[in-house]
Length: 294
Image (cartoon, rainbow, N blue to C red; front, side, top):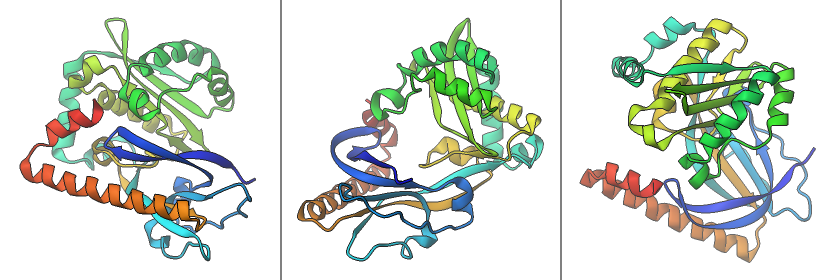
């Protein structure tokens, strides 16, 4: 079934959106399995009211192979779709991390002195959801990216009934300071909803909770893959056992407005990339990161 939805094409500096333009696009997402196989998807017919397609997690090797005659193409982002092979076992996976990563994770876990609470049944998720939802409202993922935990407890409970969700809370002195909620797609668990209390950011609670969640998943043996999904980040890069070079490709109808939009996005993204190079040269990454997150 063709799924068409409004997509906000954002002019962004880090996590901060300066402006956005909406287009009705047919979204064509690739799964981790399809990305790992180097798949090139077959695009569905384009409805008359749609402006084009947005293909996400397209293997970079297929970028030039996918296209539609007369459509305007633009790469929205390039990234590695990181993942963890859960068949490795915890000890082998952990040994595969860099020495600095292993030492850093151990040090953070000792320093934070918090408890991990685990949730998987419908009844357990009824306890998890209001605590995680209240925490999510304070995170930059929700404030700046619109990526908070959804209000849909019933949806999570339906997943739980099919044994297709896992969730965790990190609790310190009775207060939830980090959450992780991962729905499943077959044998793959998705890094879908995550956040931590900004007041505890210096303690890296998200990394501590992620480590304990992975320890659980390796021991359980229910899932074959942990999928960090689209986009990059130091946390994903640090913990992944592998990855696939991907692009998000937008194909638009060749209207004058769409040509102007693609030119504006390309110019803006080029300016941001230049500014990032200047910041790195000046050694001001820390200051820039605080500005981007507000």
